[in-house]
Length: 431
Image (cartoon, rainbow, N blue to C red):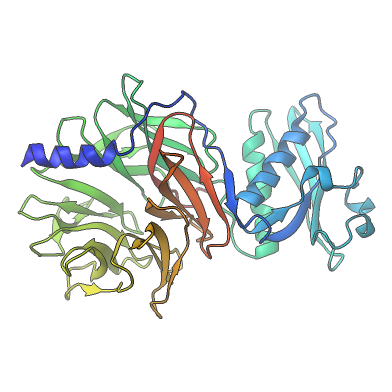
């Protein structure tokens, strides 16, 4: 039993393995929806310091707004040469090409860099934002993401997710410790390896505070679930039963973890209470129940099961009451459930005649929309504001990450230069 379980997990972890160059950045490659967002211009910020921070700030902000799929930033080459600061902006320079302009200047004060910027609505003439952002020389990216959040919220009236993180698994067979659990900024920068291992690592899951990650590791030659504090790197072992210990998922309050155990026979869904260390079994079936995902209110757990013959999505009460209820019916199989932060949509991997795709199902109406165009997708994860979904896929024959907006209009690939990347998990809001 132990050998077969280990072989099963290793096969999943090394799927599509191939040598890769050593670099850790995820590079955005937009594949669709580039012209579908809110038209905006982010002008270059005149820089009165010696650090050239203005150009870098405007570039990152422009990239953020395009990255999220909600905006269509004007290319730098298409902008007027001297767009001016807010008080000098001439709407006639822009015509009807954009709805809003971001302009500003960069200065130095008290050992800090200061960006003074404005967001001007050309359609109404209103000044939507007029702010100062002060930061250190090594905080340019964080400052730019903060400004992007402010712009996002001013235009769309919802919280931006540019200061969030990703967790994912990187596999590079050229390294002494080829399996790595990595945390990066949402755009792939600022990578930090929180675990290096000679054995497979998989299924990272954030707690709701963004301070802990649960994951599966084979470092002891057998699957076990660990919870690690990403700040001080301390960790605890949650489960290491004989057989499968897999698919951990923190509850919305962070006090429980849903997981899959086969200690009593078949893989079943359990809930572990972190305070009492008790386990509650939620499912009992002769086939595989796996991949638990919590509803935002913590009342239900969605999971994939073969109890109907082929994998479909079911839900069960998180307190163990009642029987599981089937919730997906379209296409030959559905798996890898994730629920939107507002609880209205279920995202999953669906299989049709052309492959495995990210799909969204309205929970009330059960209407299904195919969101992705790739053929080998898996493990979707929502941004905390529900605007984007990150998932694993195959790009040019290599295991990679990809993005799709929750409405399917914007799509992008995020291939890595460092190896194969998979199992992405988007963090909660971190501030």
